[in-house]
Length: 349
Image (cartoon, rainbow, N blue to C red; front, side, top):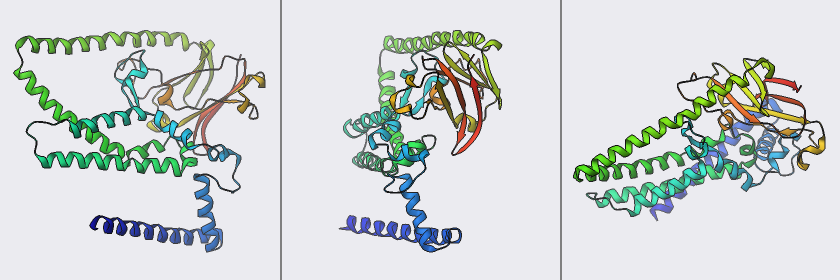
């Protein structure tokens, strides 16, 4: 009964807060729209624009997002990169050192099972209860990001440059706490096992660490070779455009972007890449009415990995594969919201 009273109290409090906020917002909008009714209409229009659209009349630019499906939107947010260790480990196995959110959620499941079902020595009953409470609240909190991606799927479909943060409100924060708890318990066990083991086992463990470090060093060789290959890319004959500090090259049927001293904002800002073919029939059926292929991307998805000691921290190098068909023109640049930050129109030689 105490639980239901508290849930009811919180729910009524939230409902009242939302209602009062809508009234206050509609009142503010009335000064711009002309009346309180039009203020509420604007709120309803904005809500529809970010969810499923309803019967509203919306610009062509956002109709694609309104027609998107919930599984399609969730797939974007399952496959987004959560942890990218390629910054520290240079390897051709990029996917092995990259963890997307779907894989991260799988890790949270595994560690949740370990925390709840693997008993640790010397821990009290109350400690086990706290661990179970952490696991329960973690998996309840996943409803927060899912509710945003499902209810506001129109907004999530477009704003992939910002909406990954919903996973951390607060689901991933609790998930990392579970992993930390499990690793803390495991480290205590490993430490006891290490000191209680024979000298032979200790030496074997130390050799294992040394082998791992050696393999990591060997993997950097691939990055050095890649760095040397850039000299072939950055030839004047391959330069297509130079604008806003970006140099754009074509080499090996790829488009290469170079930017020195790029700001964190530039690294987060989405690139647009529209490729117009010589023949419209070369495009997939769904893109023919637009007359170009949409290859928009983010820097983090197409970055060109190099050894960390070979490049400056703020150097931006991006490599994007071009379609195999004959290309007439390319329009590329970066946009933030509806504003184009910079752009270049390119006609291939």
